[in-house]
Length: 263
Image (cartoon, rainbow, N blue to C red):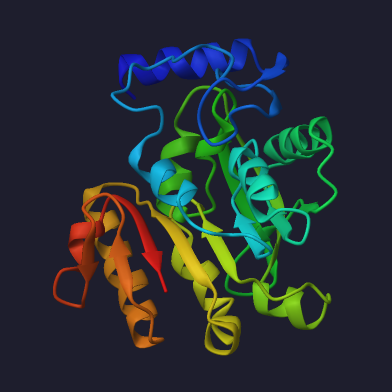
């Protein structure tokens, strides 16, 4: 972790119980507890939002049903709750008990009636998983085996057992609505999430916004090849957000870092 990131993590930990109105980013103007968005700008930027935020902020999500899979403190959840409007709905899934508590608090601070938050991991099959996270940076938590091993070598890291469900089962058995848009940020567990919602992908064709992760660059390349091939085989078109390039089987590795938007 570089020095700038280390400073940001330590400051975020210091102000984890500070409640304020966000001054920038996707949750600008919304109430929030924790993080550093009360500062004018912690890291100088040429624009107010980074590339991925600009992209998703420009999407029309009015009235949609959005699934936020892997929410950390819920910044995207807050953004989605405002973006979908009173006719829309947001369902958030966060396995880390600490992050889950932050999401619930932030939703309550803004009195969003259209958000439901569940303390559960999303994966390929129902069951239990070991989830590891750094104590001061729970947003980096992961159930991916290699990333989990890396995290557990860090001082102060923690591991907890979490419940796992599939989105297909939650929709068919638990009566959740089918999503029209799904954001996935699960630190290396992307393919498992997608496999566990394969029926939903076939029948509902939700748009997808996915961040690609991996334990190292080689793992990220393997991950995007698997994730990309899975989605292309399911009839999706894939665009790499950061490079603005359309992806095929021949150039998937270009998206080994960053985000993909799938329609």
